[in-house]
Image 1 (spheres, rainbow, N blue to C red):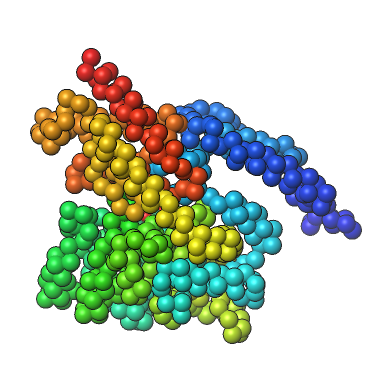
Image 2 (cartoon, rainbow, N blue to C red):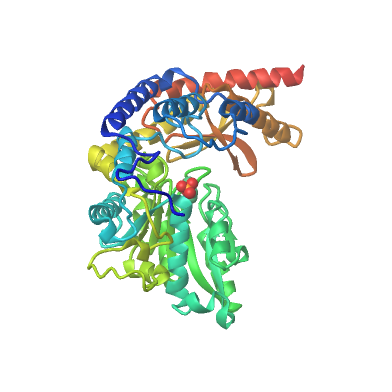
Length: 498
Ligand SMILES: *Cc1c(COP(=O)(O)O)cnc(C)c1O
């Protein structure tokens, strides 16, 4: 028998306007206090998994009866505020995850409350138009033709992957969608530097090309792809009957912030009919800032560009963006028209342009932040992050206990070198010990909560890596870094030597 329905329905998830107002105010008050106090606390508590599970009572079963919303929200806030790694901390300099802009936090609340489904225009009229404007603004910010198509996705990995799917149909032909990638015995090549982010493996794998389609091209001393080696790889493949599908240029490599010679890659791609894609997930936005590498201007020549608003636009996770010169390429790669969709509107239905069907309103937090800061605001913030990174490299270099390996965009790589090892960094006796020392140092720093850096391998050498994509980091934070790291480095080295 179906459940008996009372005349006025009372559901367990309903909340009166008065309760919503009260709990919302409580939460916002709590978060304002939390955000204000972040700089005074640790970046992370470095707690062990067992401890975190204990705090959560991880093994607890799904409750049969429900509970009051107020205490639940209070407990969730306690758990998260007190036991998270805080990438909004001024001394969070690890990985390329930005401090979240406060307007983005509020935007996510607004987006969730209205809950537009930005898969179809008719289901999200205003949100769809805001997303379209956001895409145009992003293109405008980085100097990409604003006649382009594009959409918001979950992050850089997805943005790059969507671009590969567009390239696959554009170069391989529409029949590839029906017949599959191997139909007709055709084989493809994808050309990218050894410094390319690991999205490329996932994407070639999932697109059916296989990771063996990737031609990993070596880099020069500045971690930029060697164009001549790339040219030769294409030539060799063509002789062997392999079709050049995509040339990938990285605008801001994940390890060192290197920018590939995009102008030359654009010309080479054109010459061979390959799709030219730029992975600007991290560094693409630096194209807006005067004084950054000139090659960034040439991302405007790409057939597609991946950008990550949850990196240098300071959007809270998640927000990636893919721009495609010709919007039709996305439609050709993704569109199907099943009978249960008949949206005849002369407007963009985003389910036609990407992988997702139902889509959240990721664009709102990006749109609001772009409007709040404006172009000038972003040029200032990104420019200051870069200046802080350059300052860090200079401070580390003059401190005496460090070897600075690279400085590019807002990434500095370096390592701690004990006094008696200096001048012998590359010798077979010292090199492995130096790597091991810095590896131990990274673990110790990450657990300390005093600051958070990550690591990179630069020319085979283990390095610490500080990346500043953080509106809260100041010159004073940067100036404190060398002494802080040196103290931990010395402690490890002394303990190891005794
Ligand atoms: C961060 C990054 C990615 C991956 O982006 P996600 O947002 O983490 O998916 C890809 N390429 C580069 C250059 C990156 O910096």
